[in-house]
Structure formats: structure tokens, C-alpha cells
Amino acid sequence: MKKILLFVGIAMLSFASANAQVKFGFGLGYASPMGDASDFLDGGISAHLEVGYGVTEDIDVSFLYQGDFLVGADLDGTSVGNLTIGSYLVNTRYFFKKEGFRPYASLGLGMANVGGVELESSNNNSELELKTDSKSNFGIRPALGFKYKVLNFNVAYLSAGKTETDESVGDLTVNVGLLFTFGGN
Image (cartoon, rainbow, N blue to C red; front, side):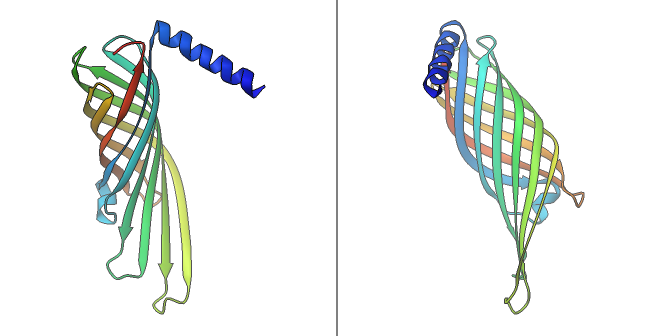
């Protein structure tokens, strides 16, 4: 059964590649906190994965997952907190050129899951307490970037809503990755 499903999937991808532009991309980057989150967080890492379809030579529509991990620490040394943002977005990208160096603008809309992890210790460091919370919000992600062959570079701002304590969460990411196109530019 698994072999049949794999064969059907490859056949469908081959058919779609012959008749359309199928997009697949991934990348890594640096995330810098924005909004109220910048008061208690430092920078972190960002990773993304996308699968999409080229509607025309200039316009792509894709499903984009972006995961950001931001690190933070209190200065008194008694608390260390981290924040994760997982966003599931429908992303639209418009290319300003058809060939070569292709600058673009994109906009992603969808859901952002904000999760906080905090590890607290008492003054004598003999007891540790782990606290976690999570909240799903509407997310928006505008970005500017360029594609050159398969190299993809972009700068994006992710607005992920608010935490349980009513603090706005967002980040500015600088991403470098690969974006493959099957059946076009």
C-alpha cells in the first residue's frame, strides 16, 4: 500500500511539474523579537518550509510553515524564559522580474501558535519549576526578498498576536534558503 501511495504521489508531482510551476523551499535565519516581547527576549533562530504553486510566472501561492525560537533571560539570574512561535500561513509572493535576479514582495496570512517556556529556580537553586503556556492567534507576515536561481533570501516581519498576559509578540527575521521551482522559473 505504501509503495502504491508513493508511486501515485510521484506521478501526480510529475504531472503537475509538466503542466505548472510547483515550488518547494526551505531555509534558516536569525529572528529578532519585536513589540512587547523585545523587553524580555533576546534573538534566536528561525526556520521555514514551504510548498506552493506558481499561478503565473510572477505570482506564487504557497503553504508556509515558519518556526521561530527566541531566547530570553532575567538579569537577576533567577529565571530563564524562551518563546516559540509556530506559524502556519498561506503565502502569496509577487516577483517583479521574470528572469535572473528576481526581487519579490510577499504576504502570508494564517495562524500563529505562541508558546512560552519558563524555568524558575529559588534563591538557593535547590528547586526548579517548569512553566509552559500556549496561545493561538491570527498571524500576518509581510516580506521582501529576492530569488536568484535556487537561492532565496528574504526579510520578514511576523506579527503573532498577544500572549496570555496581553503582551504583543512578533519578530523580524532574516532568512537564507533554497527555493526550487519545477516547471518554470
